[in-house]
Amino acid sequence: MSTPIVSDQELISNYLAGNEYSLEVLINRHKQKVYSYILLVVRDKHLADDIFQDAFIKVINTLRSGIYKEEGKFIQWVMRISHNLIIDHYRKAKRLPVVDNNSEDGDIFDNLRIVDDSIEDKMIVDQIYEDVRKLIEYLPEEQREVLLLRHYSDMSFKDIAEQTEVSINTALGRMRYALINLRKLIDSKEIILSV
Image (cartoon, rainbow, N blue to C red; front, side, top):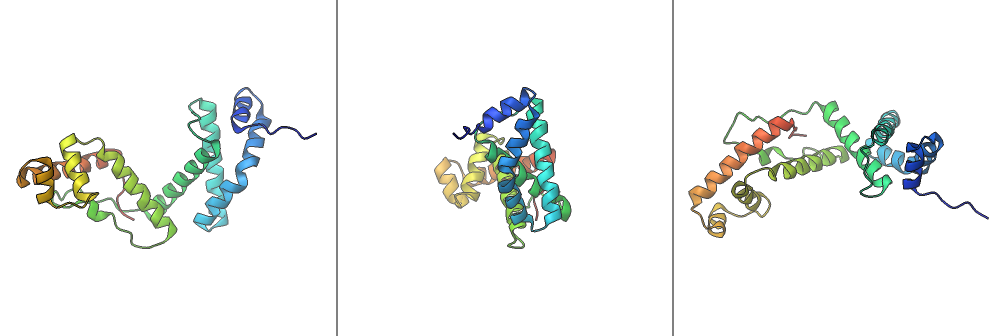
């Protein structure tokens, strides 16, 4: 008769209750998938070892702190941590330059360009776009609307003005303030906008 498989959540609960062996079972259950993913992306065994170790240190610290919320599957959470650590590594390794925020006429979106089609650069650019999309939510509604219509719907300012029932100058003004406010948010969050 086979032993029933203990779920990830049960192992987490057992570990938090003091059963260290449950953590070992949990790590062994998922280590091949997590490590293979990291190695596939970074293509360097020593770097993959370091990131893998950092990922599980973060997992353990988060579990111990009690802030882990099971919003999805444990493995997806661990993969997301690993993914973010890989991005952090490449950002630091390349010492990526920060966008010049002194130019008020420049468009932040002009700085989001893929220089190289490598997996690392694509991951970083995807993360940058995701960071910017999140920051856009903090803009006032009128500015957010113009920015989204211009950059995500690729509409002209004439079309934006018609759709939002304002003058072209008002639409342009809202866009300008949206970009100024977005730059301030980027500065405050220290987001890097170049690969």
